[in-house]
Amino acid sequence: MKKISTIILFSLIVAFSSKAQELRSAWLSRNELTSKAQIAQVMDSLANNHFNVAYVDCWTRGYPLWQSEAFQKETGMLIDPTYNGRDVLQEAIAEAHRRGIEVEAWFEYGFVGGYTGWYPGASGKGKIFDVHPDWVASKQGGIEKDNSNFFWMTQTRPEVQAFLLSLITEVARKYDIDGIDLDRIRYAGNGYGYDAYTDSVYRFQHNGAAPPTNTADSSWMRWRADILNRFMRAAYDSVKAINPRIYVTNAPGFYSSSTYDSYNTNLQDWWEWVRDGSVDMVQVQMYVSDNTTFDAYLSYLMQHVNPKEKMYPALAVAPNGNQIPTSELTKMVVNTRNRGLKGNAWWYVGDFTAAYWSFFGNQLYPAMADVPGRPAGWRIPAVIVNETDTSVVKTGQWTTSTYAYGYQSKYLFTDSTGTKSLEYWMTVPFSAWYEVYAFQPNASLATSHAPFEYFDSTGTATLAAIDQSKITNAGWVKLGDAFLSQGYRKVVRITNNGIEKQRSVNADAVMIVLNRKLSPNVITTGVPHGNFKQPQPENFRLGQNYPNPFNPTTHFRFTIADFGLVTLKVYDVLGRKIATLVNERKSPGTYEAIFDGSKLTSGIYFYQLRSGNFISTRRMVLLK
Image (cartoon, rainbow, N blue to C red):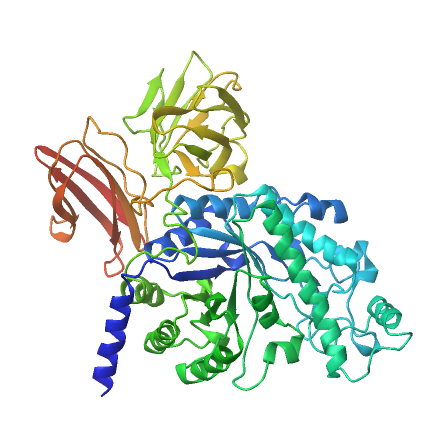
């Protein structure tokens, strides 16, 4: 019987893979955002395993992870001090959109304003409370700190709500974001709401009567919950006024099969948010270890939540640190699908071991799917041109780097003498606004003002000087936004004009990403889930794998000039074939393949491309 059930579950998964839309999302905590390289690796893993949304931590422990003018206005500080000089949210957007993944800015801590263990400030509670000590929420007896050492902002204060809304709307205005994912839009517990300000408001509205001392008093609970309901409505309307295509979502918790758990415990009336249209979707946290419990919770919710289509169960691969067998996770996902719900959210990327990644990509999500409610191809992969591609026009002497610090390993550089430039030409797939990026190598003795120019469709150039000596600029740096008409055209030029003597200017890959904020109505159907193919190439080319060294996966890009049989194979140092990655007839264009070396030992390997009379072999290093 067990074998038959397994076959049925597998059949359901395979059958579902042909459907067009399903939410496959995951949360990225601050632990996955320590560097641009780590962010890039995570986004590659998500894309390679057919996820379509990343919830990126941007408001955590009372600090923003973007350059926030709204936060600076209140506190004098731009960003969480750990990330000074960076814009973590923009870095994540660049890497996710590079692979066609949607990004929702995750306001993880909601009304939490500080944490005793993280930059607690002079107050010991958080920077915002240094400036606004009267903003701290409390229980009876003046108890402020919750059981997890967090300090919460008073939900009833208009200034607090305006502050949090200013952060949310700033992100909506500033970034080409796909969604705003709100979290902890609740009270720290049912016992909160007894600070002096909330007390005064309640007395004013109730003819001088004090708030009930019974924290479970039904009218007192409803009064506090309605404050949050109005805030969610204001957040939704504020974001939609800026950009109606930004999803406003929320991640409430729910752990009961018989009572309204989130409301009773935290005064979080998310059923009402769904009913009145204050959210586009909810990722309901049900981090349980077995499908039986999950089924009981879900059965209760299916009776009470309407419209049900806005509900997406959130699952954890390792609740409380205990890893769940993939067979049990499969049952939960099939349970979700059988109830007509359109996907799941996952907590969290940091818990995804190699076995879980393999489970997602090979079994649960064997093919890509669009995000529910989005037009097909809302997010498409970037167009990327490397400095060594044939579409790059070189003037003067440029030298290949010795060290592999570039996008696909090495990069080019030149000095201040003479007149030197690189012009990047690429095929623009659709007439639209694009974000234009240039990859900055991590290199010493680089110029502090590398002169990049990016061009629009009229040929007008805009100068964007990049400080290549600044370590936080290593990786993708946005040059600006440009409207580009469909077709083959010059997009970026870098020169050595005006750089310092005895300094170098570095040139690496250039990327354009469709800007959905500025071009929301562009139709992009029929686009493959990989980098766009370049125009009919004149030459064959096999690029260096990236990353290199790698562990355990790496990517290959190759260009085919004529239609014909193409093979791409991997060999060990003794010439023994390890794997055949490509063995099929292909049309002219640029392609990408992925190799998984998880079953191999560390060492040197070779990969070889054959097409007609063209043969090219390159070396790569597996380093475990």
